[in-house]
Length: 301
Image (cartoon, rainbow, N blue to C red; front, side, top):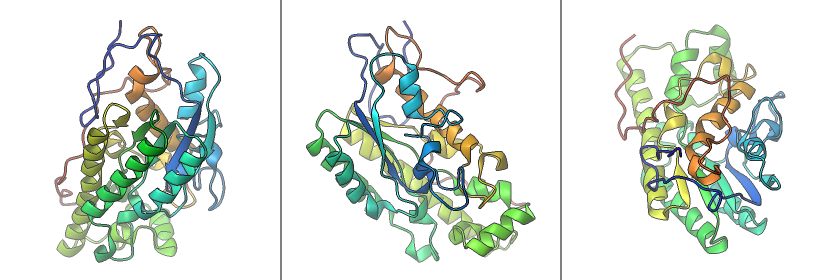
């Protein structure tokens, strides 16, 4: 019997799965921003829900939805993608209300990059407000769908994106023309103390959001799972981002998110102690790394 250990920051201690308690959702909903909407994953500046890490149906991504189908027990869930490109935590309550009205009993949430990727630092969403909005949305879900379950994915590290893209003339061009995440990506080649400190503060704010997700999920109880900072910790490369903006995940990036996050829920979905369907081309999952509340500053170039 395989025991699936919970990641750091997860809401509960896991236990061996059995056929008697393996759980299957009937309706799953993707909530969040452009990442969950699959923005720029298959077309020029358009959402591409088929490539969503959560509810996508394209085989190249092997989303949560497709992996649930691969488990081979019962009917795959119906899906609805309610993620809105450009959404911040302020939009989560509305998305959650729509998920409840559609009868969702499994929701995934990946939301927060746009709370930090604003025109100026002073406009970034405070961590306590972000946490309050998340908690309120989950409280609404509990009230509206008492038997439902929630998966919270950590906010990706946009500082990692800066580090892998700042040396690319093409990437810098897209960031400048599109005014993409200026709090982190403005003046990408600058090594001035002010710009380095700005990037550190933005990265720390995102880590603060992730710490808030861990707290909210823990308070919700066993029906919530947080990824323990796994998405934040991923070492994404330029091969994982769209060549149309060098910011959003392409199909390969969406697949990586799906692979790393789905394994976090083995005790929810597995039967007879079997591992949930894994991606054979991926290396074994290492122990997930929690996002620190205050990450270390970027090293000097």
